[in-house]
Image 1 (cartoon, rainbow, N blue to C red):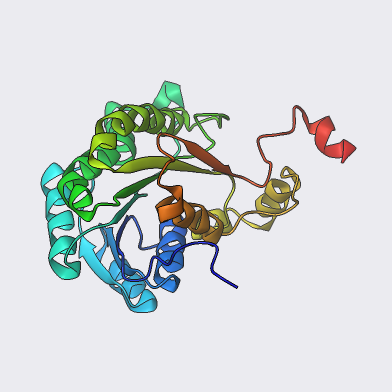
Image 2: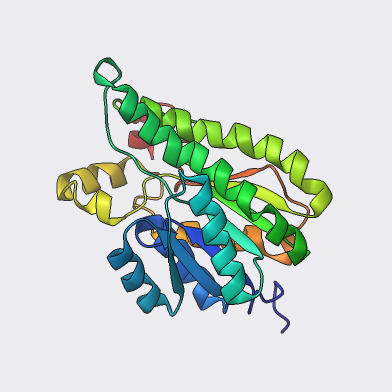
Length: 257
């Protein structure tokens, strides 16, 4: 029986924020698919540990700084001989209520989650164009585009902003045969979520029609699909990966199932 998809083996992949959480899950999926994976992040110890686990390489960098974005991309191109797939995943989510929000807190959120995406994609354009099958996959969220959480209004704004950026970028990148799409995770079981305790995890799972939290690899497989040759005609689009979390109209709808 022939494979459903052509292999991505040997493709060069960069996952920003790929040293932990969802980013590490994405990197793990691409590594298992035989890709040459590089992960980037701000913390060297975490990055080196992730790279050792994956059999990947680590490049230290801060996506909020244009010079770092260019250097990270250049290092990956030098190590791998090119860049085929950029998973722009780096993001933060510190909580701050609007009436207590400082300008510094707002800048930190937007600089990493929104500006960081834009700078990383811009830096990668020449290498992705040279690839001939360049792919960009953004990690957005259901929070902002579809749902809301108190104390994360700035996070929601950054994630919704990513989608506005994506659509404009899709138009600009299309002539270079580069596609750009977004994966929107719901509640995914990460180290950060586990730190909120068993009661939170149980309540969160109960709000999802499929009855469980997502796994980081669930986001990775969605990203992997968007990176395939078979997804070459998909650009400027979103895939929600949330176990149906955004479907219930009210808590009573969950009770009904």
